[in-house]
Length: 144
Image (tube, rainbow, N blue to C red; front, side, top):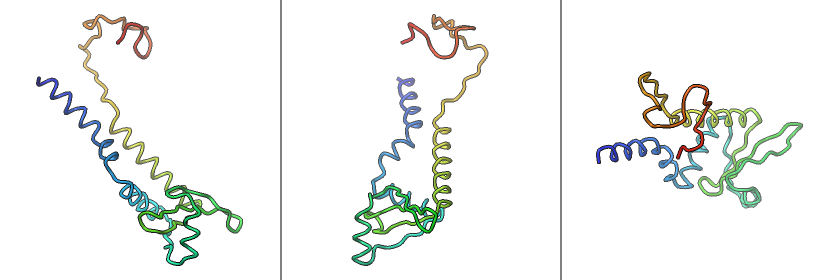
């Protein structure tokens, strides 16, 4: 009973970041993304005229698109749901945003990575498996 409870608590602790992310509403996820866009250098332009609203509706919502502008490219992110605005950024702002997202993903993966168990007295031999020196990485036939 205690082992089952402990296993459940451990599973819940490891899965908590994923569960919290799954529980966030679409508006919360978009708002969080917009905070990151602004921090990376994107500028929010409100769709405060009929012409801007019409142009905002032509873009895919909550996705990046790239447009040529004066020999360079600008990156656009349309948000008709949360702010009713268009985020506009340079290639540098987009690169900064992508780097921040990569760092966050890496941190999340590191948090979820299993802990290395290195007790030298622990042995697979007690489990009757075919493991041992030279067996190679991973589990082999018969491991279920």
